[in-house]
Each structure stands twice: as structure tokens, then as C-alpha cells.
Image 1 (tube, helix red, strand yellow):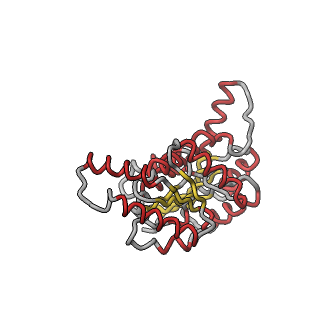
Image 2 (image 1 turned 90 degrees about the vertical axis):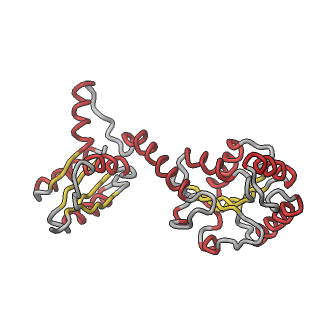
Length: 275
């Protein structure tokens, strides 16, 4: 049997309508559907792309969450005229709220997605960040808003998770003397790379405390000479990559470090981040 298609349309990220659709699909055994998503549908040009996609298939259902009444009505009318299954998710509930509150909706694109989409954006950012923590994966590395590099125990993971809570997709990599630098990192936008620097004596204390607590036996891990060699390696690496943002983390809070990174990134070349 040919796959049925679901077309998910939103004036936001389309994450909310995706979650709603998933909540329904999970109730069916092997629904055999393919899903297409259209986000940022907030003008007629973008809406025409949706209509073109809808017209390309015969067995399709359109689900949409669009706040703009004009755009919502155009899509609704098109689906009606062409006998396309469709669900105007926000339209239905908005009419109920209008009746209850006795007020008309603002009808501005994106207003109704701020809570839902931002929440799901944070969830997606956390999922991405956990999957790319501590050299775990380079898959989809080009989707990272921020790539953090640093020596082991320099605070990469807690900083990454803090930024993910703010909605940023973060990948972090530990740099170890004697191990190859991940070559794929040379192919990404170097302006998105942050390297954390830390006082070697402070790092020595952190590693010794952790080694004692976890009963680690790696002699290099807590070796003062090895840590100084790693610090020198990091210094030489940053000299080869002047685009990287160097951030000193010694004695600083995660909030302070994150604030510095975001302030620089938001100014740097008009960089656009997911959040």
C-alpha cells in the first residue's frame, strides 16, 4: 500500500504541530506515513510553497498552526476546494477561546508559538547537545550553534548543557595530547568555535580530586608536566585558528562564561543562532 503523507505547516518552527501529530500517530500500529514539515509560513510566498507541495500528492493530509487569519483562511479554502484532508489546529481552538473571552485574537504570526516552540526548541537543543557531548559524535556537526573545545575537566559539559537550556545546540570535544584533532571540525564555520582556557594548576587540582574520587589510575591524567604540555598544545592550536573565540574559565561561573560567549557570537558577523 502506498504511503500516506502528512504535511505539517506552521508560522513558527513547526515543532508544536509535529509533537501534536506524533501524539496521534503513536495511537496507531504501523501508520505507514511520511511527514513533510514547513516552518516559518508567515507570508503568501511561503504559503504558495505549501500549496504547491500539497498539490503534488493525492493521498495527503495537511495539519497547520498558523496565527495569521488571512493565511490560515487561504490554506483552509484551498484544502476545501481540492478535497484535501486538513486540520486547522489553532483555528479551532482560537474560535473557542474567542467565544469564551469575548475578544478577538491578535492574529500575529508566531505569538501563539512562543511558549510551545521555545520549550520544544530547548528540548531539541538538549537532545542535540547530549548526543554531541565529550567527543561522542560528529554527526550533523554543521547544525551546531556552538562548538566548544577544551582540555579534559575544563568545564565543557556543564557549560554546554547550560547553553542548551537556553536553546542553543552545542557540541563539545575534549582535546588530549597525543590524540588527533577531529579533522571534520576544520570544515565547519570556524567563527562558531569556542576554546576554553584554564590555569594549569587549577586544572591539576580538579583532576586530582576527580581521580581520587573515582579511583582513576591513568598517570598522565594527574601529571603536572602532562597538563602543562596539554596547555601548550592548546595554545599552539589556537594560534593556528585565529577565528576561534578564546574564553578563560578559571574562577568564573558558568553563567558568566556563557554570557561572554553569547555576547560575542551575537555581534560576530551577524551570526544567527537557533535560539
